[in-house]
Length: 216
Picture 1 (cartoon, rainbow, N blue to C red):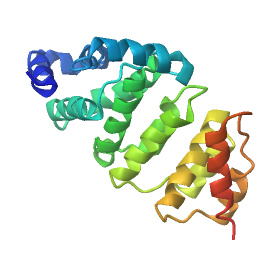
Picture 2 (tube, one colour):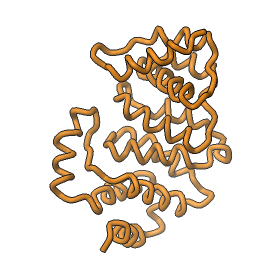
Picture 3 (cartoon, one colour):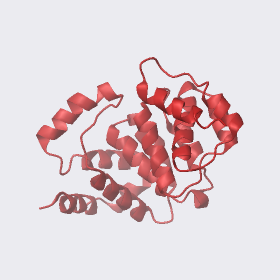
Picture 4 (cartoon, rainbow, N blue to C red):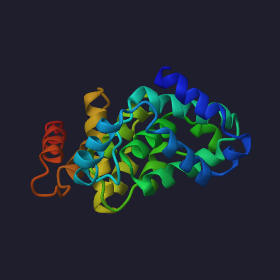
């Protein structure tokens, strides 16, 4: 039986009342992550890519499985997505690699207009005091992929003046925007190139250099 079939059966067995609690949903998706992941691969991924990459766990769940879980959550929620908006920060708090990826899918595909929420504000309020650049990039790219506008110049500036992790969020968001041919104000870029990057973080360093190249 395929992993998708096993996952669909597992999710189909869950009671409808489950969707009234973001905490219960967090428990169920954690049970769903390992479906279809061979035990040896899962253990290897957890050992090599968990704590060393800044995650509490990394099971190696394929992207298509995570997208299937996200689709199930959104479909079952229907028009009442309040619980899923509450699930996003909870997933960031638990901070598994799969949690971060699933939260990115939810953030990008929930109806933010109907909820009266800005996905960028939700993202900034959900992240922890320190985050691997890859975790931030996951959400940023997914939100852009879903067709959302980039963060406003005002929001980028506020992030630059906020927590260090928010300044990194601003830097990576601007990088992704520039790469997708979205313009960033020159005054914002001037602030972004002053963002402090941890010693030895070559990814953030390269991103800052790329953003700096956008200065006229």
